[in-house]
Length: 282
Image (tube, rainbow, N blue to C red; front, side, top):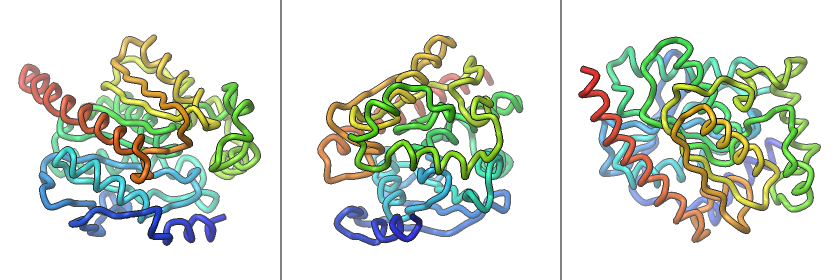
């Protein structure tokens, strides 16, 4: 499966990296990361990105290209977290790495109101889990979070996981369960640190969630958005008709380009509002 993912990642027609993209390897808290910069990136504003891949795979060319476009649209720097992968490094290695990188950014002087968490699929899970861990650790929260087709319920209780099992072009239910089992092993899938759908979601930063109607995880997105709203937090949910899992990664789709515009608007608004909130708190 990793060979298949790598072959897709190396297929240029699907990647279409933007001109001027610069990828610089680095480390935070001894976790491998990559700065993803564009010519107009602002060194103070950061989109901290957790890639998807079922907690088991990495597609750096596809994910870096997307992050570069979002960074370019918001004049931010992208920071891709190359967290440890299952099954060699099962839970809690991935969320431990993601949380450690955020904490290291704060220790190095980066300001939380200038940081946006973002992730797709498994990375959407990690973005949400990381924000909950930040709150539980009494650390300052980031300005917001973007979740694309997030995995929110490892118990797989959403109807779309069964109704869309023949429509999703990326994976079927058996593959979804295989990746989940490689990640969590014998852990309880309803553990809030594994499935944010079951977590206490109060007091979090604003969240933007998007998914397509043709994917197994549509209900993971919808139900998570409902729970975030029920917890009294600001959430925007964007369900797009006729598109598949993690559709914003594929820039050739007009829906992907529109999604990047919406996400950029969210990011810029969050930078603005979080800066005002930071000034008032000081």
